[in-house]
Image (cartoon, rainbow, N blue to C red):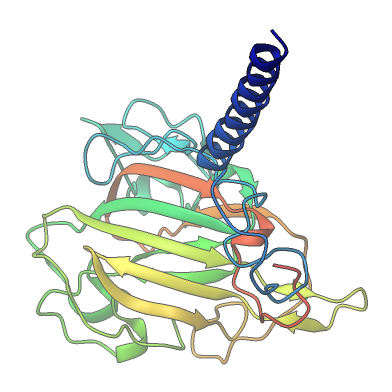
Length: 281
């Protein structure tokens, strides 16, 4: 009996040990990673740290250019409720909104988002009038003004000679696009833009400029490009301190440019590129 009892105890201990090991392995499988690796800059996380929070799950759109599940829809073709015109509403017809004529609106009539944004990812589709009747800056001219200050140019850039820092894809009055991937007038074109707002100190001095990364028709035209400041025609841009958020503005440049499928994703602070030193990443 004593021998049998001893064997039973040994078997029980072995079973318990196997159970503990199985539980540990299961936990490791649920939370894979390493804690015996070097610390990353900032001293908060190990390389491959198992306790580092996983990214939030976002459902992508079923079709290219569609809004992901966490996007704010600014225009889906059905309503202009997310916008206000400076003088009058823009024209809404067959799923697109179009800059109205100056005669009907009574003058320059920029379109301004009712919601304010800072760091943001934006998707927008636009179409230049066809057939083109003008040239250079008077042909299909509009613009995306982040925070109502910093312009990425919209223009009919297809076989249309103009100054390089004013063509489509340019940071207007500063940086020409890397390439010109324009479609023909009358065809829908797409912008995908990451805008990082400037940072200011308490005394109003500039800590970090605004940056923009832009793809036109899926082609990179601005690569994390620093901006000079508020966009001004025929003038070098300069920064003036302002708040952390402001509306997005679509420009009325007296050309019947149309827009559709506009959505944005406000970006969290940790999505913005920083120097590694002292960031705590």
